[in-house]
Image (cartoon, rainbow, N blue to C red; front, side, top):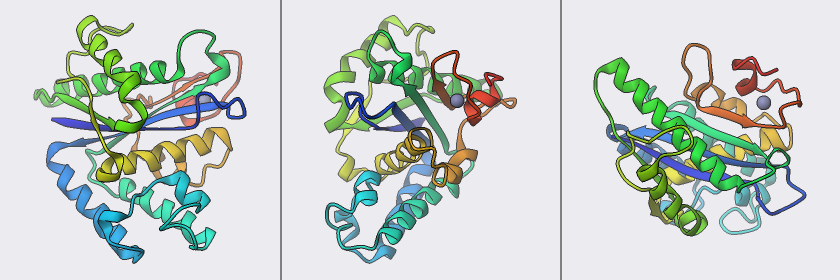
Length: 249
Ligand SMILES: [Zn+2]
């Protein structure tokens, strides 16, 4: 089984922000323990508290507004985000990244979070289907999300997708409705948070410093970055890796 740990970045309601990002890290069941251990060791090496009390949360790390990041020099906090992203970059080859970037100006109807969730479910389902065809071995998928942000909005939607299908078809490879957990207790949701923030920063602020660390991790097949989707105004030209790989420039 593959687990897809999801988290978002950017505010759907804030008119000063143009983008909303939903991003996920897909981890095969046998790699979960290993990646969590690596992340725990990394947090312990920071020496800023008991590892269980330190949550990797990119926006708090970037602003330094709260403990344990408060008081740490800005450069050190930003370096720590990069080092956290390197956990993903150096993970086992089977660990894949997914992200959907929604330009809110391109959505005239519907909810950006729901759209991004439907799209990322579909991308994950396609990845599972492709791995099954390649390895002749069917792996199911389970989505794990942060309880506080999305449980109320996405629980019912996920159930409907499984039962009635999305606009792209049924999600045959997803084993269950998403599991909602407390991000403070899930190191892999925290890595998804760093990923979502790195992608948001690339699109919202044109700062690719963090994105570049994990750009090679997105699910890709035959030159197309299936794991990275940029939903934009169709007439806007874009040279991002997602659009370039699909020839949407
Ligand atoms: Zn693009």
